[in-house]
Image (cartoon, rainbow, N blue to C red):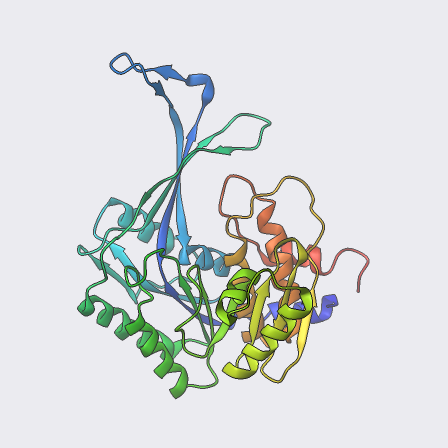
Length: 343
């Protein structure tokens, strides 16, 4: 991609309207100074003194963070937040991002705000070290009436959106936002508006999802297609192309340090290799940056290979941000896609 083509694509980002459906989490970072370590007088156990607290949107919120960093004009989160302190922090963090409108974000006392609490040992001139996480999750099914509220908001957001990104983040089915009932409604929206770009990603795999754009890793592709063992490069290409043809929608497969590939419904397959490492890495958030960039690039008129190139560069930016769930902006991506000297 040359600089003129890069500019032509990214200049459309401020005019885009992107809805994000899924499990929004609060990432709460507790920065610990090991020089201030103590021992509890009462219990004799170590005391970790927290010197700074950072809170930012996680899960589907990480996708929103990336869309905001890329300058998307209107971002419509569709999901649930608890009527609790974590919910206040998450809503406040989302509302502070440029372009975000919380008109379709449902607050309820019937669900706890999904929270990842991440203690970090932070020392000068050293990469942060994450300790064992403390998570707050919901372990019971989302009430049917609450799912209905989410569906109502999804339909309203879909009427306005140029594209929708779906992220299923929960470990236990039916306990989050992306339930089977919500997926059925999503399928009807796509059927009624066939030109709408909808990309889906799920940590439990995409089996049972309607025919939308699928984004997954190689292991998830293998599980979805029923293939035994690790897939070769040729098998991944063939499986992705077959799935894209079956769904009538593109399929994207991330390949970790090998890069990523995309297959279109008409049988085309494009591949981009991973960019070289530039130091220590932290892969948290890379997949969400890929989802955000694939979606807005395609919504802005990029081709399959161009979208892969932009998403691949975004992932490279994010993995080099340590101790946080990072984001990639247009200028950072541009330096990798169109380095100095390339016209």
